[in-house]
Structure formats: structure tokens, C-alpha cells
Amino acid sequence: MTTAGVRATARISARDDGRGGTALPVLEGDGPLALRRTRARGDEARVMLVGAMSGPLGGDHFAVEARVGEGARLHVGSAAATIALPGQGKGEARYDLRLNVAAGGELRWLPEQLISVKGSELEVSSLVELAPGARLVFREEQVLGRAGEEPGRLTSRLTVRLGGRTLLDQEMACGPGAPGGWDGPAVLAGRRALGQLVVVRPEFEESLPEPRALGEYAAISPLVGPAVLVTALAGDALRLRRVLDEALASLD
Image (cartoon, rainbow, N blue to C red; front, side, top):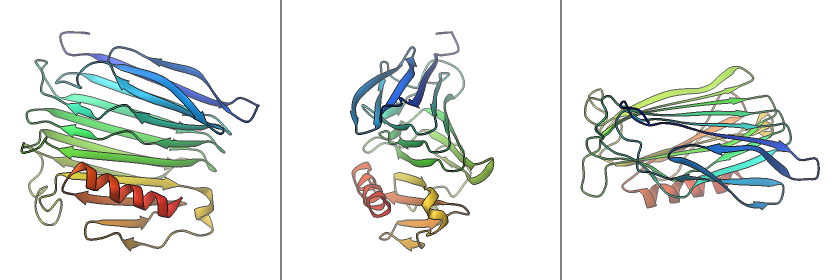
């Protein structure tokens, strides 16, 4: 911890154990980021990210790094929502994800929601690097403010690359100080829960799902590559999760 805020990094490394399962030779977290291995499911190792402190607060910088080796399967979830809060530290908080999946590896990144609280300032940066033949399910959900509350300022950038080629690179900014129109009818249309789901699978090279609407405020869009993007808006976190779960079930 410093006067500028808390610095914390969690690291996960998954590899094929040679016995039909996945080993976790690296599973370490510090400060507010704790990692817990939970019961495996088949050949898939499962890890839970547990927040040991409130935050991120203003001035904090959290990072999570995960590497999935060839033939390994890793599922990462979180025990509770991440809540971005205002803090005494100067400047905005940062939360960085750096995820890497080797050929034949699979990562399912399915944490709980990120909640942007009034007065908070948070920048999220997610970079996913995939080797050809890797598999990915990546879910991101953001809730703007608690019940009856205005949001803080939230900036989020998601970049997904396959074999060094960019499949997706997009940035979103909401809340006070964000470019005008973020809450208008052409963007969030008054909704306070937004999410996206990226699914990358080698078999999509042969048969890519068709674009289609999922109700009034969600859609499946194929990307240039063996990948699809699901985007969704909803009035609350529960409805958002329902839409994304249904979309993932239709793609699995």
C-alpha cells in the first residue's frame, strides 16, 4: 500500500497435468486479490477470485494475469461483484486483465458484475491474447450505480487478439466526464446494466453463427475470425445475466 493507493496483482498459471486434468502451478494473489481453487469439473480446473478488501478505490491499481497452457482448461469466476468506490487517493483507479491462452487451451472467464458507484473513477483494461486453436469464453458485465444512484465514471477497453491479429478492440466510457451521448437513445437508452460476451472457438472457422437479435436490447454479431460477440443492455444486473446466459447456452 502507498499514499497513492493499493497496488495488487493476482497470477494464475494452468497447464495440462498429463493425467487428463489441469494443474495450477501458479496461484498467487496479494493485498485485496485472493485466489482460491475450487472443485474441478472433469479436466477443467476452477478458480475463484475473492476480494479480501473493499475496492478498487481512487488511486488503487489492481491487476489479474492468467496463462493457460496447451491442452489445459481453466474456469475463473469471482465470489462477489467488484465495487468501484470513491477513495481518498488522488486520481482514478485502474483494473487490468492480462489473459493468455495457448493452442489447444481453453479459458472460461466468468466473473460477477462490476458496479460503478457514484463518485468513483475507474479505468478497466482487458487484453486477451490467443494462439490459433485456443478457446475462449469471456464475459464482462457492468452496472452503473447502485439502486437509485447515479454512476461514477467508468472507462473500459477490451482487446482480443488471435495469433497476433485483432478480433475485437473497443472502448466504452460512461458517467460524469464521459463523452456526451453515452446515456442517450443511440447508446444506453437509459439502461444501467450493460454486458458483452466473447466466444472464440476453432470450429467457428467452418460454421460461424449467424447475426441475430436477442430480444430488444441484445444481439449476437460474428467477428472477423472464429469468434462471436454478444452485446446486451438491461434495466438491472439480474436481467442482464439472464440474457447473457441464454446467449451462451445457444452457442455452447
